[in-house]
Length: 195
Image (cartoon, rainbow, N blue to C red):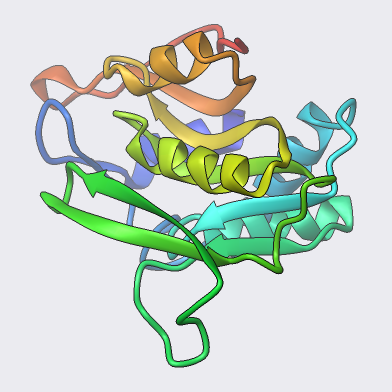
């Protein structure tokens, strides 16, 4: 997706060979016009799938998932990382390890949000080691629902998550795949992989 790649080049900051900071438009401050375009792109790429709901994880996945939901006219459910007084029982739960934050979090979704006849589109901001997607996958499978695929805003193609998710048979549509962040330079993959 050209507009996304241009935004990554102009505003992204390479902090190391594995860390890209995109907080000015994706995961701290949101660029609504870019998110709208991202939502349209996900809707186009998954137009062949009989999706009934979109599932993401708080908080950075919410903006792109919501815009895709708006475009596809579907509800968006997000897995919570924190406990809530209103969300304390009757939950699907999985554990997700964050390499960026160096911590594990239990994520959860109320059991009445996903039903076994749902077809779910998973959406997340980044795919690196695949832990967040694996956790979301586990929640959906606990519900007995089907997964249409995963929409990823930015995939770090040099890390193993994308390969593992694809090997598990999940369709992955990444809008920008980065092959390298070496020497402070962002290098994109020319052709995005879809399974």
